[in-house]
Image (cartoon, rainbow, N blue to C red; front, side, top):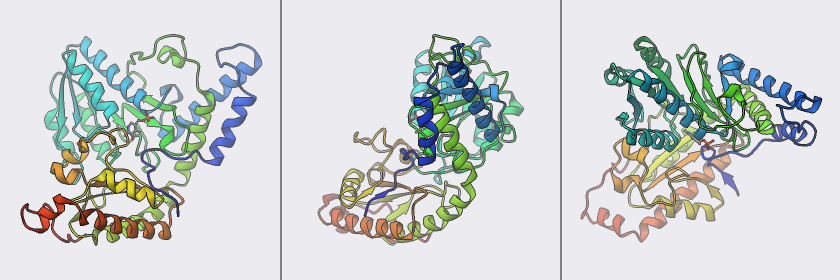
Length: 401
Ligand SMILES: *Cc1c(COP(=O)(O)O)cnc(C)c1O
């Protein structure tokens, strides 16, 4: 059996999406900036895509900027707010400890330039509260950037409430909604969002294309300089096939969101219940305030990397930590942020189900993980120390879920 359960890392391009993309490559290949018909046809499709994406997000078409993906959108949103704030003497930015590295590393670069960054703690359940944000805002705060749903543990943040606070205090608010847009209905106006990032490859669109939404009136700074594409704010010949693919993928995701979530919820319950039977294991992140396709567990006494390689042998593709950091031996910054000790954070597993998931797949995952954890513990010196009482357990043998 082959089970792809790493949809938070990336997804397969759907047939619908591919079918929409192919004619752009072969027929409407003109440059949208060219004046002859095949260019103008491309321009027309580009602007129609912008309208369709704007409609889904509750935005205006001119507030949609096409980018090369989530990372670029995050970079541009944050740098833009920083440059704008700087001009007014505002050099303080608020974020959280469990953001994606596209956000955290951009903030680190700004710190080197003299910006002050406050990274909010994340509660044990993987959620940041609006009160924490309100308490951290200062006179010189230029931006609050908080992710909508976390890419590792799937926890969903109270974005509308946080946005309302920022609006009241006159502070720009950006959210990385890459993991949220296909699982949660988003309306940038109702949810008080000034800037938002999405990435097509997380919802069955192609890799290398995304969107930065920036509310009218938000001053954007260029990250990519060159031609006048995207109203002068993002140079480079438009990836029209990618943009069309992303548009179809987003429409499909939003159209089927409620039915998918209902299905995922049942499978999530089944997975959590099954994996909780493994002794000294614990779910990471809130049991309910999470994306329905995400399950993330820590198991005491094992290495996440070994776990995922042995699961790969059984045909199961999952991840440990985030794809960007696996390969390094550092434990996940997300798990550390929610208070997991180092030794437990190393033994983590993220399962992110796809729309084709069913009970059979889920039962196969439960059976395989149970076997592999038992096998790895059988020769782990660390586990030995726990069973002989040399080291204390971090988790209870069984925690009620
Ligand atoms: C995947 C991801 C990104 C990066 O998006 P790319 O399109 O791969 O650059 C940013 N933020 C989050 C939360 C993600 O999951």
